[in-house]
Image (cartoon, rainbow, N blue to C red; front, side, top):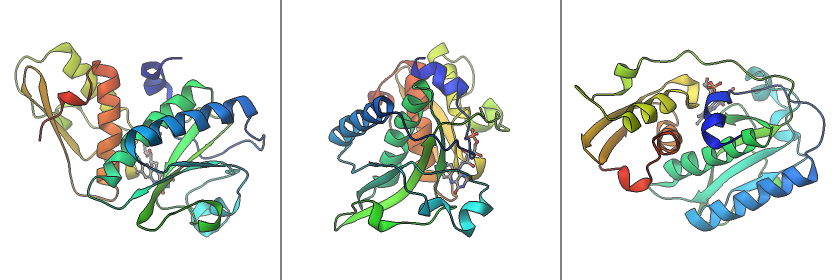
Length: 223
Ligand SMILES: Cc1cc2nc3c(=O)[nH]c(=O)nc-3n(C[C@H](O)[C@H](O)[C@H](O)COP(=O)(O)O)c2cc1C
């Protein structure tokens, strides 16, 4: 499965099987995390066999069951930390999906277990991503319409429509989809985050989907 297919097949899953992560898959995830950390300067970590984060009231409220592996999205505090966690965290979500694993982004309904991870001075834990095996595939979220998240009027290149359509399939906190795309010129796109919890993380996530589906890289973005 390639990452574009993963965009179409991924849905959040909150009930996981007890099976521990296969060594080959865990190493594959570790390698990807190392690569993305080197590229981004983030300090993301795979936490395995740790049940406390998803054992309290918050996790039950969030309807989580059987979570014992998660990716902790950690990085140096700064203006772009949330967006970077969104972008590189979603790359890991899609790679995990392509490896046959299921995931759920979690910003609120978990308990921070600082002992299970390394948070250096000046760093912050932004969110986690539950990851593991599940018999469930999840369901397609209710989505806004194309024109609610794209301000572009008139003819649009196919790569742009493909990118926005893939952004509409992206996970966002409380499914808020508070982002707006606009084609500025032949080769420049602006995307802005609205107000809402984790909306800057969402922004990084939708940029990740847009780049994969449009075939463009980060040079497509303008402010
Ligand atoms: C930044 C972020 C934070 C999230 N936090 C939570 C959370 O605390 N609890 C939860 O159950 N789901 C959480 N979610 C999952 C969203 O509810 C889910 O992605 C959204 O409803 C869309 O559904 P889908 O992922 O199946 O497409 C979060 C998603 C994102 C992107």
